[in-house]
Length: 406
Image (tube, rainbow, N blue to C red):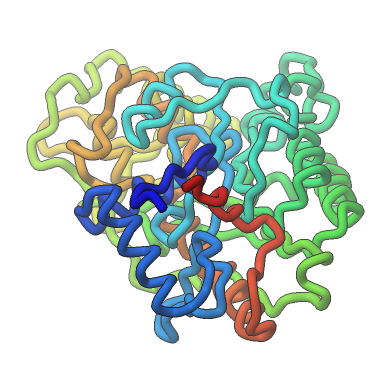
């Protein structure tokens, strides 16, 4: 018998797991694989990577379990950061915006697939969690107001964006991931007198999922009021009874805006006298009409308004006061911090223009909030795993390595 093993056709998700573990343990690939196989031999079980053996038990102090996920409408990876932080392995990504793709590729070493409407579900690997921050413009207060003023359709009548939810539903129907993790704007529940939400709920319910939804304000984790609806669904074919899932409670003592500000921002972010005068006059005109529109001069010891994708236009919703100067807008790096992305310029550099950076952060999922929701999901998965106390919890477990050719 030869002393060498030739393992062929290793699935991408397993390759990703091996690469991640060798980087984490700083081992050579051959050394890591031999050690894993030796441990398996000593424990007298055949490893079905990464965690479907009863010999591999999660720590009683840690709710993390190895799992696979897909990242749809990925943006710049807010969900991915949260899921990987909790032990997840990304097996598929889709994002159509080329500038977001550029950032995503730089941060994660992976170029997302493009338009999800052009990708057949059969091309998507099996996975445990489907994560998607599906487009919010058709359902947002700002988006609806703009479309109404232009006489355009919105919600599910918006062919180009609103119907993208049904791409998620189709993927869920065909791939049957045990868990769905979705995020959208707060207005999703109230849009069109609640009919949009009823349609979404009925669709997910009809697919056979237990549904949990809650509006969460990110202000407990980042110095920004950012209310978003999180939707978590569990497959009834896997979870026979309604899980005891609970959304995370918001921290009571979140950070203040001054905690994330740069000490010496570039003067180019200071408003010109002309723009500052215009914003003041604009606010005054609307105040006289009884409207609430206008600039937002931020309280450095508090939290800001919601950062929007339009922030690049004039920065009016979040202006930073300056002594003896006109106010300034946030820098892109401050927006990155305001959204709770890791503050690591080497690992997460800004590789696009200021305009595109503002758009990307304004459209992003807050990773710190998403990470807490993921942890709550893993509490349910771990509980179910322990209840069964056998084999693989998830139907979409990563397949075993092909039998080695000797």
